[in-house]
Length: 429
Image (cartoon, rainbow, N blue to C red):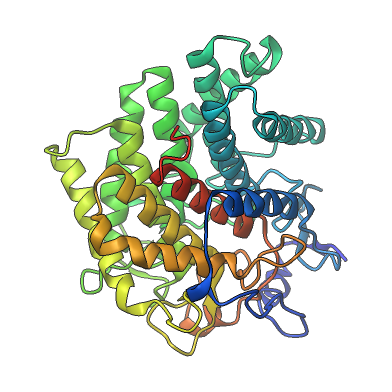
């Protein structure tokens, strides 16, 4: 089955965002995370299993494959399409490749990981590059990382001439589209345009990870300060409208009113875990990319924002599972692995960068990492991962999202494991 998305059947499409009649991937934990010992050899074994599982994720029913009116097929589940779930997968693979190749330039694991990435890009070119939107832009982060590493290590060390020229053209074209053609909300925010909907007047927390971080990387790579200044502004604007001033958590989306001016409202009062994890990751990523001085006011603002969020996570970590719930403050909502892995990766990155104190946050991150690993099945799938989630109008919407094998469940856990390795000085890249 392939769902035909047209103007008159969006209600049908929305119905498929529920778990009704769907056998979810909710395995029992493979082990008790509190007794699990994680060492370098075990981490390597888990990474190999996660990468294998990521490339084999499939929706065998076709229930979550969409065909747009122009004929394009959008597959938000598997590894073999160009969309944000697969882009996060490329980020995880690049992190692992960078670490392994830095530790040992002749590493067979590194060579295999790079070959896997190149084959993915090759297949996407054969299929045709998708239209530009906030989420498809996410692929440009790993593209820019490969171009940057090729320049650092010597042209031709990572990319041949054809692919380097193609990648360089991509990052220039897509970044200029973001700067000059992407629709804006009032006050100049990046409108969260997706493959399905224009989401007019909407700011989403996902945008910082999917578009602002790639734009930052490209700006540094191409020496275009205007990109960095734009990225800073987007962080400020999204923080202003999406961060809950009481809890320090973030709401999923803000919709400006149609009337001129800044008035509007959040899509709902739901404090959604995966949406929040993009912030936990994006803030330390931006700090590491830009190298801002700790005395810089923007650096201080970002660190303060991150600390408020992470401090609020501490009492909400479920002691039985070691994970956080898909609605962070709702004990009746299910535990969710992808958001938890994102929290762990961001916290470990923050500790490594010295913006989060090890003595305060490390135990929480390590228990969360082990709890996420307990969700990995023998086939390398990650259990209790919520499917791709649009901005819902109420809390029950988020609680009803199906849990299934998703590319980003694997890749977020890969990112977290690599951050654990770097924090432990295991071939720090």
